[in-house]
Image (tube, rainbow, N blue to C red; front, side, top):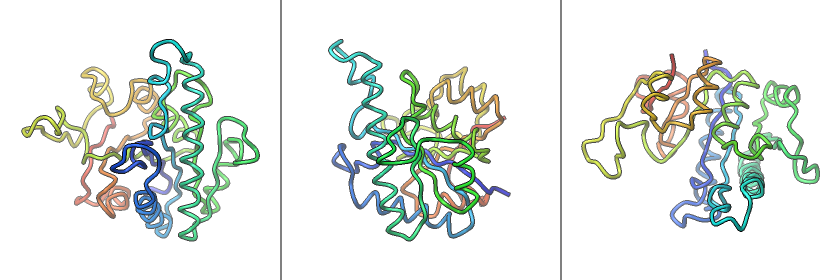
Length: 237
């Protein structure tokens, strides 16, 4: 039985239609979905990207800003998102802790693995921010790393599409959703589930990656309960 999961949201997901910043309605909806999991006894870790404010790769284009600094800017953006998510979850009465890979003790805890696991065991949601604390690593990789470190049963990448397709469903009406994909297939065929480092880390630790549409209400719980009506794609052995 699935007891502990890690949910990965993109920063852009929080921006809603505007494409920038944080949309309150989206934040409220995501918090309500996490509450469903907590109410069902699931231990939840969360990682949120920072693309709704800044991306390190984009910020460093043109050479004015070094990639290392650009990535640090991106890490700080994830802290903003993490604090916002913490507030939204607390509004729903959920006990939350934010743990950062960078030390920002006035704002949140510094990431300590044993402390994170203890929080989860006590029923608290833990939001992991600032990526891995290192430049050149994506928040996808950070999410997979934290999932492995806390012993999660699966990592759920909540996106704006129902799962993984053989081609872009926004451009091709005949795109077919792939329900089950092997790690090696995803790497070999360059299927954009997560970046290669994330997939390899998941494969090495036999951690299933589930890709689903975050806008399907109740879908997260269905996935965790292995409900056959759940709509998603699964990457595993």
